[in-house]
Length: 288
Ligand SMILES: Cc1ncc(C[n+]2csc(CCOP(=O)(O)OP(=O)(O)O)c2C)c(N)n1
Ligand code: SF4
Image 1: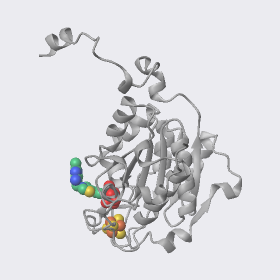
Image 2: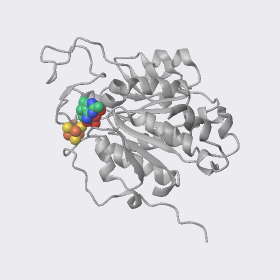
Image 3: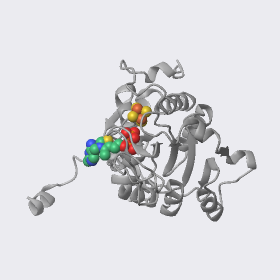
Protein backbone atom coordinates (compact mmCIF):
# COMPACT_ATOMS: atom_id res chain seq x y z
CA UNK A 1 0.00 0.00 0.00
CA UNK A 2 1.44 3.45 -0.87
CA UNK A 3 2.44 5.55 2.11
CA UNK A 4 0.05 8.33 3.15
CA UNK A 5 1.45 11.84 2.49
CA UNK A 6 2.56 13.65 5.67
CA UNK A 7 0.26 16.01 7.56
CA UNK A 8 1.34 19.23 9.30
CA UNK A 9 0.24 17.79 12.65
CA UNK A 10 2.85 15.00 12.40
CA UNK A 11 5.60 17.50 13.26
CA UNK A 12 3.69 18.78 16.28
CA UNK A 13 5.18 17.87 19.66
CA UNK A 14 3.13 17.86 22.85
CA UNK A 15 4.70 21.16 23.95
CA UNK A 16 3.20 24.47 22.78
CA UNK A 17 5.83 27.16 21.99
CA UNK A 18 6.99 29.38 24.84
CA UNK A 19 7.93 32.17 22.40
CA UNK A 20 6.61 35.68 23.16
CA UNK A 21 3.22 36.34 21.50
CA UNK A 22 3.87 37.77 18.01
CA UNK A 23 7.47 36.50 17.78
CA UNK A 24 8.64 35.89 14.21
CA UNK A 25 9.75 32.40 15.26
CA UNK A 26 6.10 31.28 14.92
CA UNK A 27 6.15 32.12 11.19
CA UNK A 28 9.36 30.15 10.67
CA UNK A 29 8.01 27.18 12.63
CA UNK A 30 4.86 27.12 10.46
CA UNK A 31 6.81 27.65 7.23
CA UNK A 32 9.20 24.79 8.03
CA UNK A 33 6.30 22.43 8.71
CA UNK A 34 4.53 23.50 5.49
CA UNK A 35 7.70 22.99 3.46
CA UNK A 36 8.17 19.47 4.91
CA UNK A 37 4.61 18.57 3.91
CA UNK A 38 5.29 19.77 0.36
CA UNK A 39 8.58 17.82 0.35
CA UNK A 40 6.59 14.72 1.29
CA UNK A 41 8.88 14.04 4.27
CA UNK A 42 7.54 12.25 7.34
CA UNK A 43 9.21 13.04 10.69
CA UNK A 44 11.37 9.91 10.49
CA UNK A 45 12.74 10.75 7.02
CA UNK A 46 15.00 13.72 7.87
CA UNK A 47 17.03 15.14 10.77
CA UNK A 48 16.89 18.62 12.31
CA UNK A 49 19.78 20.00 14.34
CA UNK A 50 18.82 22.90 16.61
CA UNK A 51 21.11 25.62 17.96
CA UNK A 52 20.84 27.33 21.34
CA UNK A 53 18.56 30.35 21.48
CA UNK A 54 14.85 31.20 21.31
CA UNK A 55 15.14 29.80 17.75
CA UNK A 56 16.73 26.56 18.94
CA UNK A 57 14.00 26.12 21.54
CA UNK A 58 11.98 24.86 18.58
CA UNK A 59 13.61 21.50 19.47
CA UNK A 60 10.92 21.15 22.15
CA UNK A 61 8.07 22.13 19.84
CA UNK A 62 8.95 19.90 16.92
CA UNK A 63 8.43 16.18 16.48
CA UNK A 64 11.19 14.67 14.32
CA UNK A 65 14.58 13.01 14.62
CA UNK A 66 16.64 15.85 16.01
CA UNK A 67 19.59 16.98 18.04
CA UNK A 68 19.88 20.06 20.26
CA UNK A 69 23.47 21.14 19.76
CA UNK A 70 25.67 23.50 21.75
CA UNK A 71 25.52 27.21 20.87
CA UNK A 72 27.43 27.75 17.61
CA UNK A 73 27.92 24.02 17.01
CA UNK A 74 24.84 23.08 14.99
CA UNK A 75 26.68 23.01 11.68
CA UNK A 76 29.48 20.56 12.63
CA UNK A 77 26.87 18.23 14.15
CA UNK A 78 24.85 18.45 10.95
CA UNK A 79 27.82 17.75 8.66
CA UNK A 80 28.74 14.74 10.81
CA UNK A 81 25.18 13.37 10.54
CA UNK A 82 25.20 13.94 6.78
CA UNK A 83 28.54 12.16 6.32
CA UNK A 84 27.31 9.24 8.41
CA UNK A 85 24.16 8.81 6.32
CA UNK A 86 24.16 11.02 3.25
CA UNK A 87 20.74 9.76 2.11
CA UNK A 88 19.09 11.79 4.91
CA UNK A 89 18.08 15.44 4.39
CA UNK A 90 19.73 17.40 7.24
CA UNK A 91 18.34 20.78 8.35
CA UNK A 92 19.73 23.22 10.91
CA UNK A 93 17.56 25.69 12.84
CA UNK A 94 19.60 28.34 14.66
CA UNK A 95 19.81 32.04 15.47
CA UNK A 96 21.92 34.72 13.83
CA UNK A 97 24.03 34.97 16.98
CA UNK A 98 24.65 31.23 16.95
CA UNK A 99 25.37 30.99 13.20
CA UNK A 100 27.29 34.17 12.42
CA UNK A 101 28.93 34.66 15.84
CA UNK A 102 30.22 31.65 17.74
CA UNK A 103 29.44 29.36 14.78
CA UNK A 104 30.94 31.60 12.09
CA UNK A 105 34.04 29.42 11.48
CA UNK A 106 31.86 26.33 11.06
CA UNK A 107 29.55 28.21 8.71
CA UNK A 108 32.45 29.20 6.43
CA UNK A 109 34.04 25.73 6.54
CA UNK A 110 30.78 23.95 5.65
CA UNK A 111 30.02 26.42 2.84
CA UNK A 112 33.55 26.04 1.42
CA UNK A 113 33.08 22.27 1.38
CA UNK A 114 29.60 22.52 -0.15
CA UNK A 115 28.29 20.13 2.52
CA UNK A 116 24.77 19.07 1.59
CA UNK A 117 22.90 20.67 4.51
CA UNK A 118 20.19 23.34 4.81
CA UNK A 119 20.89 26.14 7.27
CA UNK A 120 17.79 28.04 8.42
CA UNK A 121 18.76 31.17 10.35
CA UNK A 122 16.29 33.10 12.54
CA UNK A 123 17.83 36.52 11.94
CA UNK A 124 16.40 38.91 14.55
CA UNK A 125 19.55 41.06 14.85
CA UNK A 126 19.79 40.50 18.61
CA UNK A 127 20.53 37.75 21.12
CA UNK A 128 16.92 36.90 21.98
CA UNK A 129 17.22 34.18 24.61
CA UNK A 130 19.78 36.06 26.69
CA UNK A 131 17.47 39.14 26.66
CA UNK A 132 18.53 41.53 23.95
CA UNK A 133 22.29 41.95 23.69
CA UNK A 134 23.79 42.96 20.33
CA UNK A 135 24.36 40.19 17.78
CA UNK A 136 26.88 39.97 14.92
CA UNK A 137 24.12 41.15 12.56
CA UNK A 138 23.20 44.26 14.59
CA UNK A 139 23.49 47.40 12.47
CA UNK A 140 26.33 49.73 13.49
CA UNK A 141 25.23 52.37 15.99
CA UNK A 142 22.25 50.41 17.35
CA UNK A 143 21.67 50.78 21.09
CA UNK A 144 21.06 47.42 22.75
CA UNK A 145 21.23 46.12 26.30
CA UNK A 146 24.95 45.37 25.90
CA UNK A 147 25.74 48.47 23.82
CA UNK A 148 24.00 51.44 25.49
CA UNK A 149 26.15 53.85 23.46
CA UNK A 150 25.45 52.05 20.16
CA UNK A 151 27.39 49.18 18.56
CA UNK A 152 30.84 50.07 17.24
CA UNK A 153 31.23 47.15 14.82
CA UNK A 154 29.47 46.93 11.46
CA UNK A 155 26.91 44.12 11.06
CA UNK A 156 27.73 40.86 9.28
CA UNK A 157 26.14 40.63 5.81
CA UNK A 158 24.89 37.00 5.69
CA UNK A 159 24.23 37.01 1.92
CA UNK A 160 27.68 38.38 1.02
CA UNK A 161 29.35 36.08 3.55
CA UNK A 162 27.64 32.98 2.16
CA UNK A 163 28.30 33.85 -1.49
CA UNK A 164 31.99 34.59 -0.86
CA UNK A 165 32.42 31.40 1.22
CA UNK A 166 31.24 29.09 -1.58
CA UNK A 167 27.62 28.40 -0.61
CA UNK A 168 25.72 27.07 -3.63
CA UNK A 169 22.20 28.17 -2.56
CA UNK A 170 21.94 31.58 -0.91
CA UNK A 171 18.53 33.00 -0.04
CA UNK A 172 16.69 35.43 2.24
CA UNK A 173 13.12 35.27 3.51
CA UNK A 174 10.87 37.27 5.86
CA UNK A 175 8.98 35.37 8.55
CA UNK A 176 5.95 37.63 8.02
CA UNK A 177 5.49 36.02 4.57
CA UNK A 178 5.04 32.34 5.36
CA UNK A 179 4.14 31.15 1.85
CA UNK A 180 7.31 32.67 0.36
CA UNK A 181 9.43 31.40 3.28
CA UNK A 182 8.09 27.85 2.96
CA UNK A 183 8.80 27.91 -0.79
CA UNK A 184 12.42 28.93 -0.18
CA UNK A 185 12.94 26.29 2.53
CA UNK A 186 11.57 23.64 0.17
CA UNK A 187 13.96 24.64 -2.62
CA UNK A 188 16.87 24.82 -0.16
CA UNK A 189 16.24 21.26 1.08
CA UNK A 190 15.92 20.03 -2.51
CA UNK A 191 19.19 21.71 -3.46
CA UNK A 192 22.28 19.46 -3.45
CA UNK A 193 24.95 21.32 -1.50
CA UNK A 194 25.25 24.02 1.16
CA UNK A 195 21.98 25.97 1.30
CA UNK A 196 21.28 29.05 3.41
CA UNK A 197 17.83 30.48 4.14
CA UNK A 198 18.44 33.60 6.23
CA UNK A 199 15.02 34.59 7.60
CA UNK A 200 14.34 38.13 8.82
CA UNK A 201 12.52 37.48 12.08
CA UNK A 202 11.08 40.26 14.24
CA UNK A 203 11.96 39.87 17.93
CA UNK A 204 8.97 41.78 19.28
CA UNK A 205 10.38 41.98 22.81
CA UNK A 206 14.00 43.09 22.40
CA UNK A 207 14.25 44.61 18.93
CA UNK A 208 11.92 47.60 18.62
CA UNK A 209 13.56 48.81 15.40
CA UNK A 210 13.27 45.90 12.95
CA UNK A 211 9.53 45.37 13.41
CA UNK A 212 7.02 43.72 11.03
CA UNK A 213 6.05 47.18 9.72
CA UNK A 214 9.70 48.20 9.30
CA UNK A 215 10.31 45.13 7.13
CA UNK A 216 7.05 45.43 5.19
CA UNK A 217 8.02 48.96 4.13
CA UNK A 218 11.38 47.74 2.76
CA UNK A 219 11.22 44.16 1.45
CA UNK A 220 10.68 43.25 -2.20
CA UNK A 221 10.95 39.97 -4.09
CA UNK A 222 13.78 39.33 -6.53
CA UNK A 223 11.41 37.16 -8.58
CA UNK A 224 9.17 40.18 -9.20
CA UNK A 225 11.94 41.92 -11.10
CA UNK A 226 12.89 38.90 -13.22
CA UNK A 227 16.22 38.41 -11.40
CA UNK A 228 18.11 35.19 -12.24
CA UNK A 229 20.38 33.91 -9.45
CA UNK A 230 23.20 32.44 -11.56
CA UNK A 231 25.65 35.36 -11.69
CA UNK A 232 27.93 35.75 -8.64
CA UNK A 233 28.78 39.40 -9.32
CA UNK A 234 25.10 40.34 -9.62
CA UNK A 235 24.38 38.34 -6.46
CA UNK A 236 26.99 40.39 -4.57
CA UNK A 237 25.41 43.61 -5.82
CA UNK A 238 22.03 42.43 -4.50
CA UNK A 239 23.63 41.41 -1.18
CA UNK A 240 24.98 44.96 -0.74
CA UNK A 241 21.62 46.70 -1.27
CA UNK A 242 20.57 48.58 1.86
CA UNK A 243 17.68 50.98 1.24
CA UNK A 244 15.38 48.20 0.06
CA UNK A 245 15.73 44.57 1.21
CA UNK A 246 15.65 41.88 -1.50
CA UNK A 247 14.00 38.54 -0.70
CA UNK A 248 14.41 35.30 -2.62
CA UNK A 249 17.31 33.31 -4.09
CA UNK A 250 20.37 35.53 -4.52
CA UNK A 251 22.67 32.83 -5.87
CA UNK A 252 22.37 29.20 -6.98
CA UNK A 253 24.97 26.91 -8.50
CA UNK A 254 25.09 23.18 -9.24
CA UNK A 255 28.29 21.43 -8.23
CA UNK A 256 29.30 18.23 -6.39
CA UNK A 257 28.50 18.10 -2.69
CA UNK A 258 31.24 17.23 -0.17
CA UNK A 259 30.11 13.62 0.41
CA UNK A 260 30.15 12.97 -3.35
CA UNK A 261 33.88 13.69 -3.40
CA UNK A 262 34.77 11.33 -0.53
CA UNK A 263 36.01 8.07 -2.05
CA UNK A 264 34.92 5.95 0.91
CA UNK A 265 31.30 7.12 0.50
CA UNK A 266 30.98 6.59 -3.25
CA UNK A 267 29.57 3.06 -3.03
CA UNK A 268 27.21 3.41 -0.08
CA UNK A 269 26.56 5.54 3.00
CA UNK A 270 28.91 5.02 5.93
CA UNK A 271 26.05 3.78 8.10
CA UNK A 272 25.51 0.83 5.71
CA UNK A 273 29.16 -0.17 5.61
CA UNK A 274 30.52 -3.05 7.65
CA UNK A 275 33.47 -2.35 9.89
CA UNK A 276 33.80 -5.95 11.12
CA UNK A 277 36.48 -6.78 8.52
CA UNK A 278 38.63 -3.74 9.40
CA UNK A 279 41.64 -4.51 11.58
CA UNK A 280 41.67 -1.71 14.19
CA UNK A 281 44.62 -3.16 16.14
CA UNK A 282 47.38 -1.12 14.43
CA UNK A 283 45.49 2.14 14.98
CA UNK A 284 44.74 1.29 18.61
CA UNK A 285 48.37 0.37 19.18
CA UNK A 286 49.56 3.68 17.74
CA UNK A 287 47.17 5.92 19.69
CA UNK A 288 46.69 4.11 23.03
C1 LIG B 1 28.87 28.06 24.15
C2 LIG B 1 27.83 29.04 24.62
N1 LIG B 1 28.08 30.36 24.49
C3 LIG B 1 27.14 31.26 24.87
C4 LIG B 1 25.96 30.83 25.40
C5 LIG B 1 24.94 31.83 25.87
N2 LIG B 1 23.89 32.03 24.92
C6 LIG B 1 22.77 31.29 24.92
S1 LIG B 1 21.67 31.77 23.75
C7 LIG B 1 22.73 32.99 23.22
C8 LIG B 1 22.38 33.95 22.12
C9 LIG B 1 21.20 33.55 21.34
O1 LIG B 1 21.06 34.44 20.26
P1 LIG B 1 20.78 33.86 18.82
O2 LIG B 1 21.72 32.78 18.47
O3 LIG B 1 20.72 35.00 17.87
O4 LIG B 1 19.35 33.19 18.97
P2 LIG B 1 17.93 33.81 19.40
O5 LIG B 1 17.78 33.59 20.87
O6 LIG B 1 17.94 35.26 19.06
O7 LIG B 1 16.95 33.02 18.60
C10 LIG B 1 23.91 33.00 23.95
C11 LIG B 1 25.03 33.95 23.74
C12 LIG B 1 25.73 29.43 25.47
N3 LIG B 1 24.57 28.93 25.91
N4 LIG B 1 26.69 28.57 25.08
S1 SF4 C 1 12.73 37.20 23.09
FE1 SF4 C 1 12.44 37.80 20.96
S2 SF4 C 1 13.16 36.06 19.74
FE2 SF4 C 1 12.84 35.34 21.85
S3 SF4 C 1 10.75 34.51 21.88
FE3 SF4 C 1 10.63 36.65 22.55
S4 SF4 C 1 10.20 37.82 20.68
FE4 SF4 C 1 10.96 35.80 20.05
